Image (cartoon, rainbow, N blue to C red; front, side, top):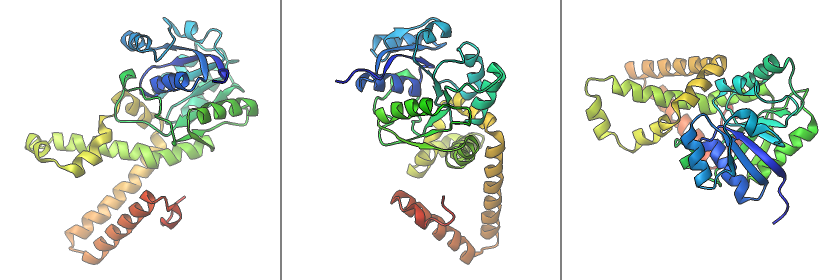
Length: 295
């Protein structure tokens, strides 16, 4: 096995993503020491007992001291408070699903954007959450998006790029704004709809009976509503403008479909269903170029 790329990696937040990074670093020999801090002391104890982490720190300063990489794996609205306890000179990356707030928070905390801050987002996860769900292969063959800004040193980007490649991921780079707009459409809206559907059915008079007879379609559509509620609350709020933009578009489409059903408009309803079905087939076959309006 080759020498570790990092001597000491500090992970702030030991949930599904933080825990999966930690155990993947161990499995692939990328870090000599992996130390973590989490406000949930039980998570730290489980991480230490199971060998997911090397050390459990009792504070953020203790975790990041002498670390040559700091990974923020906390809900996006908690990033600002964490940055206040981290030196601006450290190599820092994060795993949040919203990047605009990371840039804004760093500018507010440090008065500038540190040149060793490399915002990142692994497009991988699960409806499961917590360190007990940590998976060392979670990032294998998944994309990780990095969103460096003008102030970011190319050498810092390259180190984080190599980190994720070492964990089996494919790395792509895009702007902060483009990331947040794309993820609002491909991830944030679907999660919001799943939560909304479950909550809508809960409010029905026959809610219990509805869930008793729910079949595969309901289970598949609502699987992601089992995701971490705190994490998703923060994502919806942090990426509010982009989420509201696509939500408005979706509501317009629902109104069109409602009108088609109400008016018995067979031709237009069939057209929409055919179009969506074909796009879904093309997506699952990775034939993205065929999808109308795809990017």
